[in-house]
Structures are given as structure tokens and as C-alpha cells.
Length: 97
Image 1 (tube, rainbow, N blue to C red):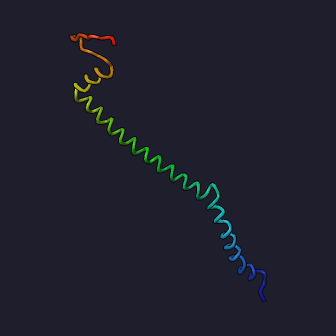
Image 2: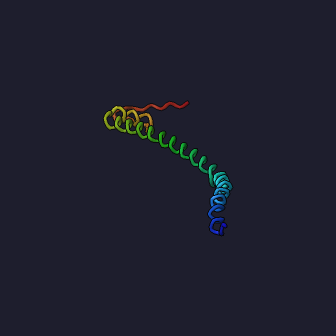
């Protein structure tokens, strides 16, 4: 004769399995589940791509800084082209259009 304990031992695993079969898809497919995971993965990929771009830019700027430190002609070129500077011994002519 089976008692309440035997009935519980037989039905509890089946009940837990049924609950898992219902709960897991609901938890995975809700907005905070799998769709959020995919969105966060896309965001992470974008951030990683941006970091790679920034690393390349930093490397380029380091080369430029080193070039400016080592080459006085580069500093003079920037002073002339970007700042409009001239040497004291030079005469500047400006023509109107």
C-alpha cells in the first residue's frame, strides 16, 4: 500500500520537470532574457570596434608627437600652415582679391 510519501516521491520529479518545461522558455524569451543578451552582445561588439579605432588613433598620434619632437621642420611647417606664423626676417605680402 502506497502512502503519501511514496506518492510525493513519484509525483515531485514529474511536477518539477513540468514546471521547468513551462518556466524556462518563458524566462529565456522574455525581454530581459535572450533578446537582451543579443542586444548586449551587439553593444559589446560596437564598443570593441570603437576601442580598436581609438587604439589606432592613439598610435597615429604618438607617431605624430614623436615626429614633432624630433623634426624641427615639422614644427615650422605646422606653425606656418596652421598658425600663419612667419620668421622675423621674412616680409609678408597680402594681396586682395
